[in-house]
Image (cartoon, rainbow, N blue to C red):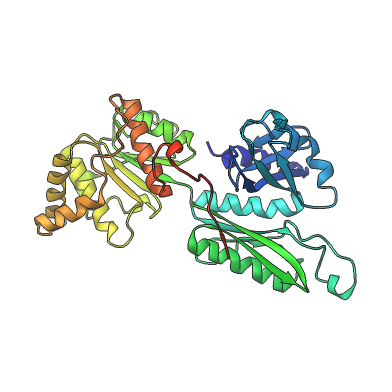
Length: 397
């Protein structure tokens, strides 16, 4: 499960009780760290917490000081996991510096609402937040009372409608926040920008959060169960669909978000249009049925012309997938030419998975999920010891 799946239930409970809380967000890292920018933890006044900002070494220290640090408003706090004398405080072995934004309910609640909305509809979200700046408010420039702008944020989902923002800051600041959030959303990366307001520097960080991954498992055999289990452990939305209604049941796949019996004889022309696959989703065909695979491939390929999936994999040898694609072309009333079939085959992960020496349902599921994760994140899949720099990219704008 993701941090958010742990955080949201506690947040709902605290909001219902009208209780205050502190949201801790990793906003920058220097050197090594277990968690990257965007990791979050929610703290309740009674000591409960959900989510993590490290591998377990910083959580207690962050919780111990969070309440008095945020007495006057949001603050970015520096936590070094390696002191000048070489000692490792907080029991950490990472040896890096972590910067954490601490904010209470007033500024954290709109952010959590935006995160929940994006999570529920599985859409991307960009969050632009002020990390450094003067104590200014709408009336501060007139010499009146000021309020801190650290923690001021704007959130943008596609196609640009705002889920929320703070209205109490100058329009110029809100414009900067919204523009940077829009740029992060468009470029799909985190971006940092430094601006000047009345001669005073302001640092803004826009965090890009990709849509919650979705996995569609076409096939309700026993080997689909470990794939479902691992994907849910990662916090993905998972759906299971199969033409065999006695297998595609909620009782067999209790943890799945959706379980559907597909009318295979109606595919590709109808019957599956209400499944609502998103362009960010992955699909794996593991029905072990040539007829089912051919019909499902035809249906998916028909939709791919307008909205291709992020990943499409087929279990089994490539020869079999090629034959299924020939049949899929016929079902789509297309000429099953060699060029068309080979073009489709080049866009499909067949056989699905990466070479892990997998030979059991559990290891095959791990192999498949590893390739999907690598594809979605555009990572190298190399051993980490061969990768020179492992970090979340932050563009300077």
